[in-house]
Structures are given as C-alpha cells and as structure tokens.
Amino acid sequence: MKIPFTHLDKLYIDGSWQAGSGTEDVLNPATEEVIGHAPVGNTVTARAAIAAARQAFDQGTWSALSMAERAGYMRRMHAALVARREQIASLIIAEVGCSQNVTYGMQVDMPLAHVLTAIDQSLHTESRQIPIATAPNPMDPGGPMILGSGSIEREPVGVVAGITGYNFPFLLNLAKVFPALLAGNTLVLKPSPFTPYAALLFGEIAEEIGLPRGVLNIVTGGAEVGTLLSSHPDVDMVSFTGSEVVGASIMSQAAASLKRVHLELGGKSALIVRPDADIQAAVMGAVGGLTVNAGQGCALLTRFLVHNSIREQFVQFAQAIVGQLKVGNPADPGVLMGPLIRESQRAKVEQFIASGLEQGATLVCGGGRPAGLDKGYFVELTLFDNVRNDMTIAQEEIFGPVGVVIGFDTDDEAIAIANDSRYGLNSGIVSADAATAYQMAKRIRAGSVYINGGGGTMPYAPIGGYKRSGIGREFGPDWLKEFAEEKSIVYPIGR
Ligand code: NAD
Image (tube, rainbow, N blue to C red; front, side, top):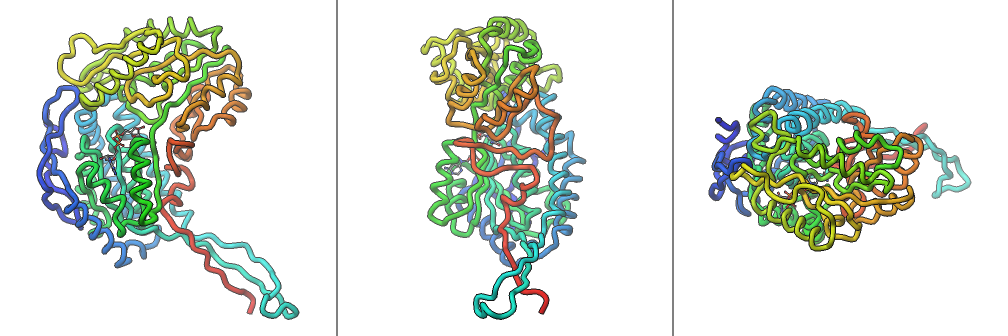
C-alpha cells in the first residue's frame, strides 16, 4: 500500500522546502516495514527556522492582520486538511499503528471539529472594553475627578516553538499550529522523530493556502533540536506536548531566556467505579479505553478504583471481554488495538508488567505478546488486580495497554487514592448517583472528570493538567490566551 505524504523529503522553512542534514527511516510499527525516508533536521536547520520565524514576526505583517483575516487563512487551512481526511487517516494508521476507529474518530475528525470551534471563538476575543471608572486626580486631589476607561488588547507572544510527541501526532501538531497562528504568532514546529510526516504535511497545506513565508516552519530531529528551540533567545514561547521528564527539561532549558512555557504532559488517571455503578458499562469503558492507541494516550483512565463490593464481578467481566478484542495490524478495519510505537516502548511496558508481578499484584489477563504476531511491537492487553496505589504500576505512566484494579470501601477513600498521584490530567467516575458523582468530581485534583463516560466531544471544554501533568490549557474559551500577551490601553474620557 502506498503511504501518503512520504514524498515529503525536505523541511519546510521560510516558505520553501529545504534539505535536512540527512534522512531517517520511518517505520510502520505494526509491520516494522520502512514506510519512508524522512528528512532529519539538526541545530543548523533549526536555527534557520527560528531566524525565518523571527523575521516574519518582526516584519509584523502576520501579527498586523486582523483576527478575521488570520481566521480566513486558518479556515482555508482547515478546509485543505478536511479535503485530505482519508490521506491523513491512512498516514496515521501506518505511522502510529493506531486502529482505524480511533484514527478516524479521535485522531482526525475530533481535532478538526475542535479547531473549527476555536476559529469561531477567536473572532470574539480580540479586544475588550474596560468598564468606565471615576477616581480622584492624584495630581489635583481637590480638583475635578477623572473619568477613565480603556481596552484590553490581545497581542501575540512572538516566535513560538511547538514541540510534540508521537501518540496523536496530527492532533498535537494541529493544537500548536491553529492557536499559535490565530493569535498572530509565528511558529517553528518540531514533531517526534517517530512521526515526522504528520507534521511535514502542514508545510504542503501552508503552501497551498498561500500562508506568508516564515509564519509556519517545520523542522524534524530529536532532543538536540528540541533543546535548541527551547533555549534559543529568539524564541519567545515553548508549547510542548510530551512526557513529564522532557517537560521538566524544557522548563529549565527555557529558564535562562525566561520564555513562556506551556506544557501538556503525562498522566496516570483514575476511574472511580462506585458500588451503584452499571458494572458492565464501567468495564466496557475501562477496557475499551486501554485499547485506544494501545494505551498510548496521555488522558486514558488506567487506574481503576473499584468498590470492593463489586470488584470481583468487575474483574471477571473484564477478563471475559478481553479475549474478544481483535489485536493486530490496523490496516485491517476489524482490528481494535494495534502495536506500540517502537521496540523501546514495548521494552518499557514489559518492564512495568514485570515490576507488577514482582511487587505482588495479581495478573488477571495478558502480560505477554499476542500469539501469531511475529512482526510489529505488540503487547497483550493486560490487567492487574490486588494492586496497591504505592506500587510502581499504580504510580508510573506505563503508556501501554495495562490497567490496574485497586479496591476501595468509601467515597473519601476513592478520592484520596485518585489524588495520591503526582499527575493530575484526567479522571472518571461511574455511578448511578449523578449528584454525588458531581460533588466527588470537584474534589479530584485533575484537569477533567468524565462522569459516566462524559458528555460527547465537548469542543468548548479546555484540557490540561494539574500537578506534574502540565501548565496551561488547550482548547476551550481561553485557548488563545495561552498564546497571547494582554495589553491595557487606558485613557481619560469626557474631556
Ligand atoms: P517525549 O517527551 O519523549 O517527546 C516529545 C518531544 O520532545 C519529541 O518531539 C522529542 O523529540 C522532544 N524532546 C526530547 N527531548 C527533548 C529536550 N531535552 N528538549 C526539547 N525537546 C525534547 O514524549 P513522547 O514519548 O513522544 O510522547 C508521549 C508522552 O506525551 C506521554 O508522556 C504522554 O502522556 C504525553 N502526552 C501528553 C498529552 C497532553 O495533552 N497532556 C498529549 C499527548 C501526549
């Protein structure tokens, strides 16, 4: 099968395609086949990209456009992406190894719908009036008072570096390109070395819609390029989506030049299953969640806190359905779960599984590699019971299809366990008592809580992390604020 976008063999810098420092094989993780030879950037190409973005920003033509004019470009970009929906999905299936249902729904259609909402919202956030106020004149306290007003202007931060991970590459790149550019910034985008094409495709679109040169630049490469982008004095802001460890490095790399840092990091999110829950629905949600991109999702609920009165039933039902799930190459539309991204990721996941066994958790199912899949980085969907929250498998982000079941006896205990994590990205509660679930949701230290599976795709809901899951929010009504400065312009009125 011909994989789309693998013809892209150069980096997109300053509105033109420029050679990288070499090429790197990109693998299909389901087959281990090479799908293309992607251009690799280094610090030289990254410097050129920063210079192009800096010049484009300092010229001021992009930031001087009205929000409506920039929104016009971004609508054209959106339409061009929608026109390539099938190709983008085929790329993600091959580059990430993600199953088709998740690829179309969560990797492509949902983010495209969300950015359309963001474009619409952007038109209402440009400038706001400050309420009129009266105050004594400090220079003439006995004289007439001052009648004052003003406005709050949103202006771009400047040159933004967007650095992204591999697991939802189109979504993560989209979530840098759209808000950064809508807000008037210029951008250097650096994707994961595992998924370069999902970023380079934006260069093709930028060309097609006539985006002014230097406004969007795309460089590939690894940590060396990321380090340069997050420490270079000409970069004003880093927006990063990736692991907690790299997020912490980026903060320190950015410190010397005092950049704004926006971080979307990892999680170890809890699903609380109360004793009145519909057990089958809870299990379907829990196990179904583990299959999403083979557990490689930042916000997936992987710590199942199950009331002890129903825990046995929960585990038995989970065990019964796991065998029904089709694991394999996502080129097959019937496959529900594909592979992990690379051998290195599989080795990490297998180490975590071994640590669960060593620390005394009970293996309910999985734990090995699926039979009959000799090629590709597959692991079985794995569930542990009798897990204590201080075990490694309950504390660390495994980033594979591994769930842990932890028992509890009271709502207070469930909340305490949910909050006993250094992460705080997402969470869920399953209960027949919606009001109690809502009260509990307010006590969970996480950026989102899904009660009984949530309320649809919710394009107006911001996402982001508490604690070590990140700083800042993506999507939602204040998304563009992350990428903007606010300026107060105040003046006397009435004279
Ligand atoms: P990663 O942190 O290993 O890599 C992310 C990016 O950082 C890559 O482009 C990489 O090349 C770059 N990088 C590596 N070292 C760097 C350095 N020192 N300075 C600058 N850049 C550097 O993450 P990953 O394995 O690609 O992605 C998985 C992680 O991302 C998981 O932890 C997951 O939870 C997280 N994630 C979070 C969200 C969210 O919205 N919160 C979304 C998706 C993924």
